[in-house]
Length: 296
Image 1 (cartoon, helix red, strand yellow):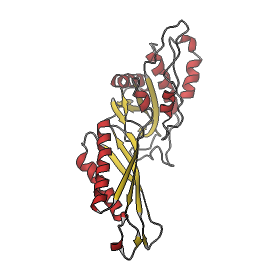
Image 2: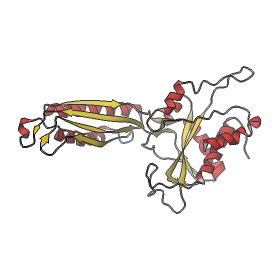
Image 3: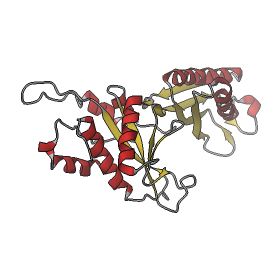
């Protein structure tokens, strides 16, 4: 969609009273591509030919989703997508024969206790309207059936929609894991690898984007979403520096219920490709309207 938008606007460059920067970011899925582009000077655009400054006024990104019908878009002001961090906890005990657990310090039950307690920590310690998610997706321990291992390892993901809650969850994970391990005479080494920050939309930019979208798609086709998505996006780095918005572009085919449609990362997901035309039109209109071009 962005390539087609670049081609469309480039063909009319002489009619556009300003400049448009197209950001083709690599490494969006976990590799901080946007951050590297910013560090390399993405926003340090050159002056115009007459020597005047040409600062970037706004930034917009579209992300197609299967949870919104094709022909619609949705977004919200404030937090729109979560932060994303990787959690790793290694519990160290003392291995031995499985027939004599009293001679060992078995890390596996302790790992299980930590997993359960992390879920309780989320429900009891984290504010309902400033939520977080801790999901353990991997538990690694042992090599055979008759040996208690020396260590057990827990891995998973942490999501939050505010930096305050993000920090609180990080601190709570360390306290829970280390405390439970110590209660069983073991050690827990907690590693949290910081990932993408919370994606925070600028409210005026959201209102502007939805107004532009409704003028293209029709009344009622551009909606304010009630809550953030707990997925993460490295466009968050851009929005930390300039105002703008991440907008979700509906791609669910006609006749498919968005509530039960296969999610984006599923091997069964299907998109209505006419949504791409909507995306090209919206990208182009956002650029032109931002530069003051009146569209009929």
